[in-house]
Length: 453
Image (tube, rainbow, N blue to C red; front, top):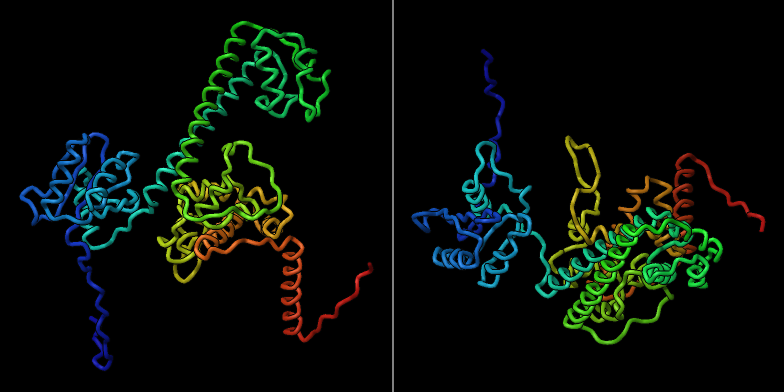
C-alpha cells in the first residue's frame, strides 16, 4: 500500500459555485397540440403539476391558476406554432414569458413524459439556467407575419408557373426555349391569346416585346404543337391560379404598406444613390422610402442589399438592437460568426452553428449577389472566394453585411462605398507590409521596381 508523503502540502480543492435560486416564482410549461402540462413550485399548491386543454377557456384558467400560485416567470418550449396563443395570452396578463428551444433543455436520461418535461423546465428556470429566444416588438411581429405570408404566396405562385410550363411542354409548345420567362410581358400576352383561341404562330409571335432577343420566326416555330384539350384545360387553370395569387399578393402588399406606415419613426426621404433596377418580386409601393422612415437609415445603400432583403431583415429583427449588447451577440444569433469548438486547448472546428434564421438566409443571398458587384464589398467577396470555397465565402460576406446593418441601426450612420479600387489598393498595401516585415526578419530588403506604363 503506498505511503502518503506527509511533507507534501495538499491544497484544498476549490469549492464550486453552488447553484443559486434566481427565479423563485418560476413555472414550466410543456406545450402540446391538444393539452399543456404546467408545473409550479411544489410549495404553491397541493397539486403542483396540472394539465390544461388548449381551448381558450382553459388557457385563461391556466393563467388564473398561475396568478393564484404567485408565479411571475414562465418558461415554455417552442413546439411548432402551438405555443403562440398561450405565449401571447400570458404576456398580455403581465407574466415574463421565456420561449426556449426544446433541443437546449433535453431531459435527463431515463423516462420521458410530459409531466417530467414541465417539471424539468420549472427546475431549470428556477436556477436561471434558461435563456429566452429573441422575439421582436409586437408591431414588428405583425410585419414579420405579413412578410412571411407574402413569401409563402410567392412560392405558391412559382408552383403555378411550373404548372404552366408543364402544360406547354406536354403540348410540345417550346416557348420556354425562346423566352427567358413565360410570365413576363411577352409570355403573358401569348399565353392569354392562346387561351382566347388563337393558334396561328405568326400572329402570336407579333405580340413579342421589342426587348425580346428571339426573332418572330423563332417564336412562331416554338408555338407549333398539338393543342390537346386536356392540356389546354390544365394551362387555363394554372393561369387562373397564377392570377388569383397575384390578387392576394396585392392585398398583402397593401397590408404591409399600412403596417410600415404605423412603424414610421423618422421623417424625410433617403438620399439619391446610384440607380438600381427594381427587384421583380418587390412590392409595388415605394418600399425604400418606407424603410428609411422606419429605420432612420437607408440600408439599401449597402451593395447587395435591395429593398426586399432589407425588409426581410428588418421584419425579423426590428430596428431596436438593444436586445443584442454587442455586434458579436447579433452575428452569433444569426449563426454567421465562426464557431468555437475547442478541446484540450486545440481548436477542433470553427464551423458556424446550425440555425434556421430567415434574416441570415436573406443576407446569404445578398452576399452571393456580390459576385459581379463593382464595389468594395464585391472585391472583398471575390477575394474570399480565391482563398476558400464558395459556401464559406458566402457566409463570411453575409457576416460582414450583418455587421454593417448593426452599425447603421445602432449609430445611425449612412454607409458609403469606397469602391473596389480602394479595397484593392488597401489589400496591396497590406501584402507589401507583410512581405517587408518577413524580408526584414530574413535580413533582406525589398526594392520596388517601376512597372512600364
